[in-house]
Image: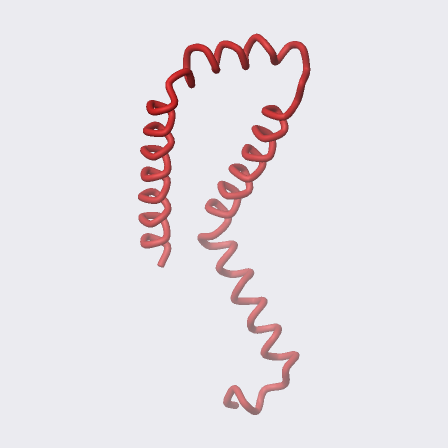
Length: 96
């Protein structure tokens, strides 16, 4: 039976079976890593915006000693972004 003769329900079942098989075989780890990094990003954003008293000494230390020089901070972010793009492209290439 060719694809045009199959019912939409059969095609949908085949599609979701393929997705389930792909997840079970090789996509769970990258999916969990992406979800972990998204949670880390949200947590970091919330900590950065929080004004809790116990965070103030940490924020002051980071501002004074780590991020004091704007040019050095910009270079650090450029380097980190380039590294992330490299890791992402290699990961996608390996998965495909």
